[in-house]
Image (cartoon, rainbow, N blue to C red):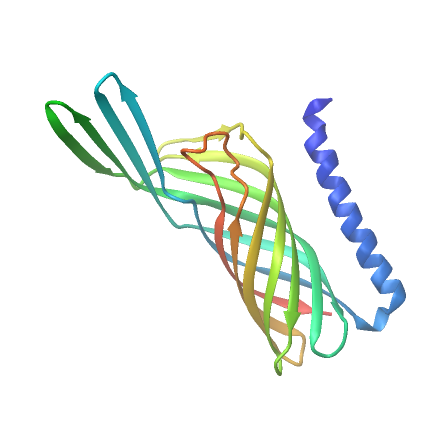
Length: 224
């Protein structure tokens, strides 16, 4: 039963947002627009440094990540308080993660320092998430800068090498982050957007090797 608790919590969050959107629609249906968007992700994770000391010898392992290309798609509702200020809430599926670039090891002892760096380009961390982004936007003749919050649920985590892909059981499932972005709207309902989400939640229990999402999204969508 405990395995279903994270799903039940995510369901309650989505239900709360849906009820809020439905309430707004009831109050002023003319100010609501529904829409869908899809696009490409450029995601990465923060580089980490692990230090281990045994007697008089200290070893430091630094891992550097690069960007992984993924995708996102979803639907949303946009409420206009007036012709300038807008609130958007939605749900989307997003394939995130990072590509491992290099691992650098440095060992210090009374005999001296030994270091080495290995370039790695065949190992990828994949984080597939269900996200609930909420944006506050201000309009300048169709151009809308925005700031917001992102609530995420890590559906699955995988590591991929050149010869195999393995599923990994994550330490944490729920993600939280802040975001900035902008979109440009055409009169026909078509729009283009670019967003950056900065994850604040460490999805790993290891603070020395954090899993915090860093995601750039570029997409296109349509409002009905």
